[in-house]
Image (tube, rainbow, N blue to C red; front, top):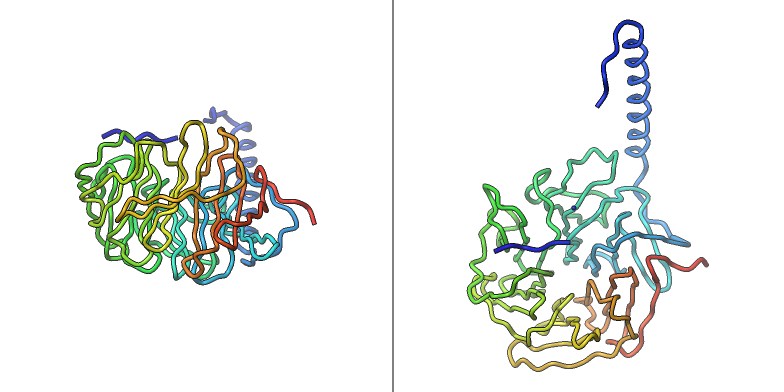
Length: 323
């Protein structure tokens, strides 16, 4: 099954060789000095009076903090109350960002000069991004789509290229990344993969967003069931046993919940979005189901504290307002 995804010097003789060598040494010394300075920066989380990001890579509510985390191409940003915060270093590109009770998991690329291998494979942080621990495939694989249970043991990745340890497609681990199995995906007939949502308590239960609806599984993706009509689903996440998702239907962007057991769907009101600005990531705070957030293709961030009755829009087009 194909998986679609949106990826030197000439030598001189005599005195010129010595000059070139000297220049190269100077450049290397400057590079080493810059890397040492970055490495020596103390990790801290500071209030940001203004932010400008080029791409949002994920969103969630880690259990070891009270803020909304937004992973970007410039590292982690946090929104709490009415203020934004940013980190002083460790500004890694956290693809597949997943908030869990102990902190967060992600894949991605490290900040230049950090000394970390690229790609990161699958990593975890339990101290708000100050340090990271290697879970699996460090320096070997980049995963754009990662799924993790907030409290359970289910861990999932979509692998784009098969290798010795992972098959192409959906793979899962039930022992925190020590061993992996490929999901059989029985009854899965979509022509694409998308986001992985994992039940917050039962890591065997997952949902996948595709261009032809939501597929649901209670056995690690080995057996799948389509639980919506074949419309495009751009983002989804669990809220308890129900699924919060965004679809594109008749050129309209919608926000809904669905009960996988009954198929019952309910619409949630939210601010109007243009057709070319669909919802890209969704998050529900497992500690407070009325606190929900979403991001858009154009890097907008919306958050509601009352289950969707009122919405704040603290980031617009990747920018926050000056205070």
